[in-house]
Length: 329
Ligand code: UDP
Ligand code: MG
Image (cartoon, rainbow, N blue to C red; front, side, top):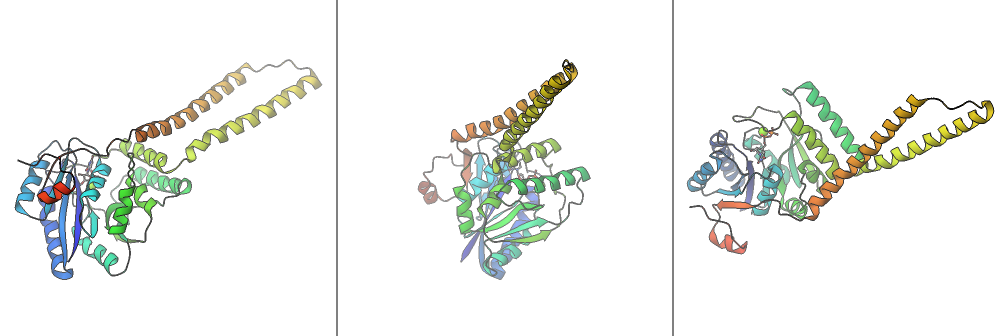
């Protein structure tokens, strides 16, 4: 029998989890009955401050399919996904949010796309941006257009993290051990044949999203820096343009002085030009600084996450992995 691992990152999801588990169990039972596909649920508690971890311990007690990892602090959803991939045993691995924005019932469709149609990845894609502020939709669209121009990885507008991957795709993702993890780019970068399944966006069942407008904006900058070096060449282009302009200006002043002997006036022009040039140098330095900072963090080779606790794993498996983490009490 083949196994499906469902990886669920959870950050302060005490309100949503009690609704999520029964839905998930229902979907898993159906997969088992209809397609002889076993499931395991791998919850990753991303350093929640509420009772998420306590809930997960209860879940693991109640259902043998539940396993959980708990981080020592909040490392972010990307880190949680990576930890999930590392610990997933399944032949197929699905990723979904705990807030039921990703309907577990879609897992069947994804499974069929991979097992029967031969795709390596089946992913949900939002077809509408309904319920989103228009300015946010506009910026999102602009972002996708820009990043697809300047990056080699393919970024699909509306692609969600809700997806199922076959083993080869999971192994490829595990080889992407970078510290600055921008999952939309990472998924796009590894490639593989992907089937896009449309789905409607729904509100989360409970709790709150942690994505403010600013966080999203900063996140998109992260994405550009992580998957494109185009901004770095802006500095060179700018430099060349300014040199050309300076040369033309010099020629103009020189000829004008020789022909008409006009004393050079124009202090305001000079001040403006100084500001402009100073500003663009600062901007270029800033861009270089961003890349330098990322390189700096990457060279430290810090672990992507630190486990505080895990549960639901059998002991033999713990030994194989070197164990070390505290077992739940
Ligand atoms: N999440 C996480 N760590 C974080 C933030 C979020 O593991 O630092 C999880 C969260 O519990 C949820 C998923 O990532 O299961 C998506 O988060 P959210 O619903 O806030 O994002 P949105 O759906 O608005 O993109
Ligand atoms: Mg959500």
